[in-house]
Length: 328
Ligand SMILES: Nc1ncnc2c1ncn2[C@@H]1O[C@H](COP(=O)(O)OP(=O)(O)OP(=O)(O)O)[C@@H](O)[C@H]1O
Ligand SMILES: Cc1ncc(C[n+]2csc(CCOP(=O)(O)O)c2C)c(N)n1
Ligand SMILES: [Mg+2]
Image 1: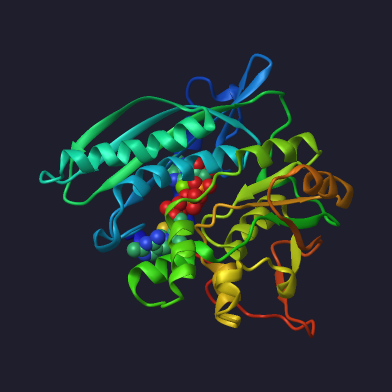
Image 2 (image 1 turned 180 degrees about the vertical axis):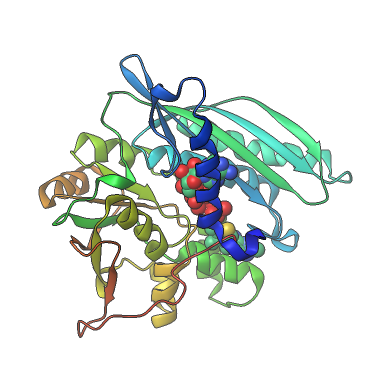
């Protein structure tokens, strides 16, 4: 059967079942493997975390609005965000570059300048990589980081009934930025600048990730595919349900002007790379007092296994046919 028919997550399940048949080598050191933002590996008194993600032309961006410096920033930032989503500190990155033969060398330099900005802001060393020619541009990165104290890690499987659900920052700006760059949305010049920047320059929430674990939060992930879809992963892995109040979702001000369409972008469009987490009210208040960005409580974890209700002001369920991005 073709990947386009099975869907992204059924394909990953198939990969998992092949891996589980073999379980080679240091399998016992794996605290948490496939299923979270990064793999967690036991190492002396610490945990190591490892992740990989990529940006591919015509999937994650188009040549028509490509900015090489921004591509470099974003390719590393989306990986740093996965480390942040585990409560980790990034340490080393390796980068695999696929570029067409006629790529300008200065554009590659621009790409690396963008990537190095993200690396130096987060204290990450670019330690190596790979290069290949290709028909379309693709930047793959992998990052290794560490969680300084064993057990103090954010997992998708740790949501508990009665936990409150919270997010960092404001949502929907990256998706509105993509539409602005693609020419299907026409905001004011000022909003266009803000939204395009949100699309190209996501800010990995590494500091907040550390604050979360220090404040007693155990469950978190980053929002790459869309809030509804990503919360779905937490519900599945934690075997719980959730109720969200749409009016509490922090829609980015440059997106809120779009009304219900703006709310839909904030709930289902992804690429904001904010953190989504659950925990006790007191722990979330501790986080809010320390974090450098807004922290908003949007709902509650419930018993109903896998069931997610997004409620409007009248307490009615807002249906979402497609809660987020799927590659297949
Ligand atoms: N080709 C693969 N081989 C092994 N594991 C995979 C593969 N692709 C994905 N996974 C694993 O499946 C899980 C889900 O992957 P996914 O890419 O959706 O997560 P993510 O990187 O956190 O999200 P996003 O890519 O949207 O930022 C992760 O734990 C990931 O490690
Ligand atoms: C040209 C173009 N069309 C659509 C999108 C939207 N998009 C692509 S991948 C993705 C999820 C995150 O990626 P991943 O799951 O690979 O980490 C989203 C929301 C885009 N960025 N560019
Ligand atoms: Mg991924």
